[in-house]
Image (cartoon, rainbow, N blue to C red; front, side):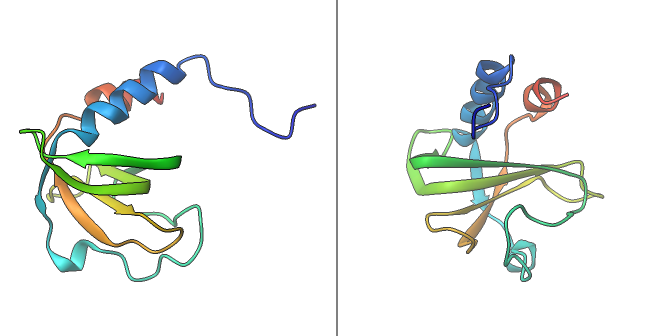
Length: 115
């Protein structure tokens, strides 16, 4: 038995949906969107649905125009919040969220891929 989990059959679909969202980052979101209690991994329950992705090497977060806004080692994509924008939290170091951006991309592709 492997120490690592098996790669899900829809890995490419999920990875593509995440990568698409990482190139559709909007403006920095308001400060109260940045969680205060993130001290462990995985993250606790948030409003709506959340998805966590961790990377072995930093990935680039880009604006729709292609400008690099940040580099991340892990991201949290959240959607379906009660009357609020969809945020993307990120960090370039473990366990310490640095900033939150508003997602301006459609999360439907990701939502379908992880079902």
